[in-house]
Structures are given as C-alpha cells and as structure tokens.
Length: 210
Image 1 (cartoon, rainbow, N blue to C red):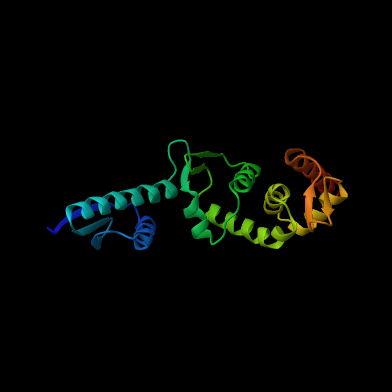
Image 2 (image 1 turned 120 degrees about the vertical axis):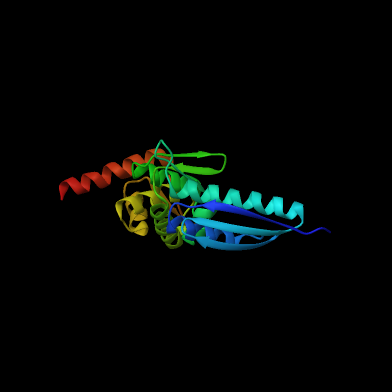
C-alpha cells in the first residue's frame, strides 16, 4: 500500500491554546503517524500514512482544534461551546446535565444545550471547577437520594456554598421532602421546581434575619 505524507500548519493565539491542543492530540488514536514541530504561534504537523489515513487524521486534527478554540474563546455573543464529555473528563467528575444547567442558571450564567454541546457564558476553567464541586456534593448524597431531589440539592449547595446533607434536613423540615424508610432514600414531596423555589425563599429569609 502506497505511503505518503502531508504537512499542515495549525495557527494558535497563545501558549494556552497550544498546550490544550497538544494535550487533546495526545489523547487521539490517530490512524496515521504524526510529528509536530512548534514555532512561536504555528504548529507544523507532519502526517504520514496511506492517503486515506492522512485524510482521516487531518480531519480529526482540525476537528480537535475547532473544539479547543470553541472552549477557550467566546463567540460574538459571549458564549463558549463545550463538549460535555470533555468537561467531565477534565473535571474528573460527572453529574447529570439538568443539574449542571440549573446550577449555571442559578449563577446567572446564560446556558443552552444544542446537539450535545453545552453553550454557556462561563469560561472553561470556571466550569471545570464548578463540575468538580458538584461531583463532590454528589458523592456525599448519591446513595441516599433520588435523581429529582439531587436536582434541587446540588445546585443550591454549590451556588450558596452549603452542605448538601444539611440541605436535605432543611427540605424535610420544610415538608418539601421525606425520608423513605423502605427505600433508604430522601424523596421530594413536591415537584422539583416548587421545592427549589420554596427552599430558596426559606434560605433567603434566614439570611435576612441574620
């Protein structure tokens, strides 16, 4: 089979983009051999293999670069675009998409989900740290809660910097949730939107009293 090679140049704005791009390239399982030479803000990539392997490798390389740029730089509307799997991988934690989106909304960040991409106004480093905090909270309460109650407790815990287990007690006191002995889990009594609203009012009331 005929072997060939092709050299492409990737332009990067700064070291941050260069490092993130190289990190992503290392994670790729490319069908062709690649050699990268960096010079200032240019990366020359030598791709070797069959024509088909080279074509596929270049497609993946350009795709990765576009994803890196989308997560590092906002578009004209001020939005970043994230692959959700990339977010969870870099955070070393994962939570349900509804929990993440509700938390962003409560932080007054713009957020939408489109074709598997999370589009939001929160920068990459901040959202990765946010997911880490949500993951820590999830680890504390996952075994004793249902999915719906987690969608109330975790966004509130992270945005208000509260202990998620203490919030479970508050929900029970407010008669918004109850402990199900047969299931060994806390469950919501009211729907999650109503529970979240009443919990927020109660917490704000406590703050005003202080």
